Image 1 (tube, rainbow, N blue to C red):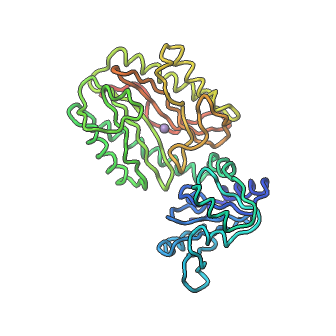
Image 2 (tube, helix red, strand yellow):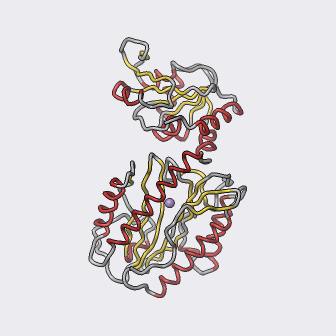
Image 3 (cartoon, rainbow, N blue to C red):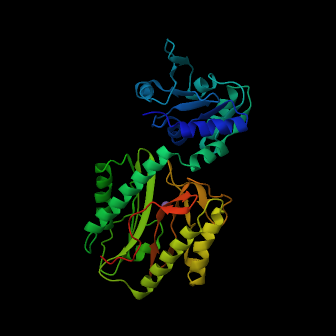
Length: 364
Ligand SMILES: [Mn+2]
């Protein structure tokens, strides 16, 4: 697989702007972003010249050598030969390869790693959180195609759940079936704490699947995620078994309208908090404001929840080719809850909904 130059060039451009000679990451997420593959317990160095170095433990050396985006792979330890960096730790070996102005993403490095790294290097260390954030929030064509596949995969999982969802089965039996389904369909990461929240439990926004038996009249909220080549799709639907109570039906209509008000607000240059506000104000006006107890959405990519944040306090501004979730919900204790979540691409023409699954109220 050829390197995703769009992403590497974007970071190098930002390094130029910030006068950084190297960006170094130790966490698996940013590492995957820089080399396009997963390697464990390793570090990655990107130089301002656009060269990519991996420093890996001996156990990961053969796997790392197969990664085509990487220019140089080293293993650290006490071995002899040009592929070895003699060092007692990953951090020490990584520090030996760089000099000048070095960027580390402070949000993604442990305090202990940072202190250790600093002890091995004289040069300036800067926080490069913003460089990685700016690059990662704006998806490349390669990333968009993977996210599209992930969204399709998750939606097929929801369709499969519709087929098996019925009174008499437990939430956990649905979760089990869906995890197997996702792996069978080519997912490479499946979040195993799947949200299957039925009946009164639908009032828990993060009601993980339990042994509760689904019964007639239950709202059932399914919030599924799965990753395709590292990139997550994140989709939620609330369905109803056999019938829907009038009060929940009303709630459903409010949530669905709030979803589309937020989506309609999306355009290049809009403040993320105003997208949140569009959903929130409508839910407030409908009398359910105090039951919408989370933010409206978040970026998706290599992490299920990443920037930008679509909350009332967010300072993020939407930029072309960001991908965000829009997921308003209303949750009333002892009554039940509804959440509907779509994944949306920010384009010059406004929001492009990546979902193909309807949001219309569905009674199973
Ligand atoms: Mn979500």
